[in-house]
Length: 342
Image 1 (cartoon, helix red, strand yellow):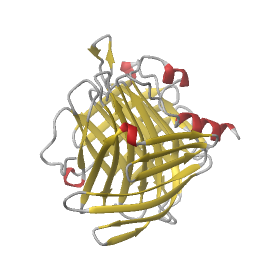
Image 2 (image 1 turned 90 degrees about the horizontal axis):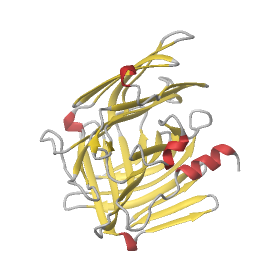
Image 3 (image 1 turned 180 degrees about the vertical axis):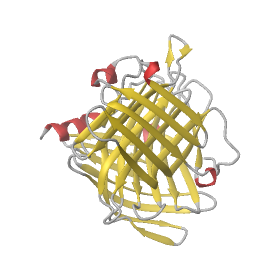
């Protein structure tokens, strides 16, 4: 196996330690490059020293007019996490997620009192842009106590096949693009904004750039940190990194729901990210913590995105997507303008 495949497998490896406060998620997003339609699927593990041990199956759908979200809790003992030589297989109730070093598959059906969603999705990485990504400046930080929350992106750019059925509609997911991520920690961050976008060309909807960023707080020695920000942009064979997370004077984050602005300065130049989502086109997801109060994720997968980059060496450029952005805010309380809550 080549290094890219081995890195993707390693980034997706289960990090759970028995008897510890721990939350961990694997998630897949797919977007229609031609319209504001998207699906987001996630498998979560939640354990605590107090005895909590559960797994969760999640799905959210967005189509520019309607949104809906589903979540199913099951005992962790009833879930399955099997590692093998080319990746791992996860089963959480009706949700299956198979991950290899070059992509994977997910299928499932979730229902609530109002609606049912069913999907069967295959995805594969896009060469170059889709190589494994981390916002952290060093992979060594994935195994250190600080920061408390780890995030990696084994597949920043994916191309998809398959179908989704929802409220009588059948979506053909062929030609959609997205990403697959993995995060874990002792608890969710006290506050964050996170964004990711695959930029596609106007003619054939083919990916040519990708961006991922985060501004969040962490807990260090019982205290909550200032907002710490990171931003990575790939365009063609170029990568621009703004990952000096402790250099607070190099970053200007503004979390002003439903908008997020981030200005960064680093060794590659300067960058400005602007993301915005309409609250009525978002879902509010209850994120349980092992030993703290529940947090709430205000979640869009059809956000408007603009990125301006001014490299130290080279011409400035801008990336735009009117509805291709994944945008999340984590807050301590639900927001009335965002529904439904699950």
